Image (cartoon, rainbow, N blue to C red; front, side, top):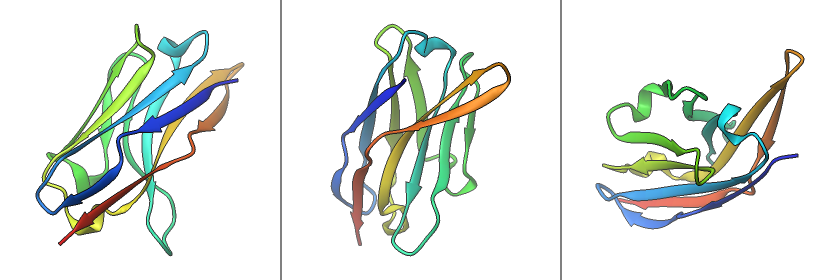
Amino acid sequence: QVQLVESGGGLVQAGGSLRLSCAASGRTFSTYAMGWYRQAPGKQRELVAQITWDGSTNYAESVKGRFTISRDNAKETVSLQMNSLKPEDTAIYYCNARTVKLYLPTDYWGQGTQVTVSS
């Protein structure tokens, strides 16, 4: 089992910055692929950014150049630095951990943290 706890959401004006953090519990955190997803009202949950066990990253086109995902395996945390925020970034942001055992992936989710960007 993996437990995820997000922090760092809030209200910010357009153009501002926020940093989300996710603390994970698990014996093999360094092997997990970690990610941030978001879900806006009336929309499906979408991938924002991912970081693999070896540090490779992947971003949604809409956040490239503005958001940066990072991980600290010693502290078992993953962070999302969000700069130049736009009103369309408003959503609930969820931390995700993906583990693979015997070729079968399992996804774990945090409870979500609200990010609101005012215009």
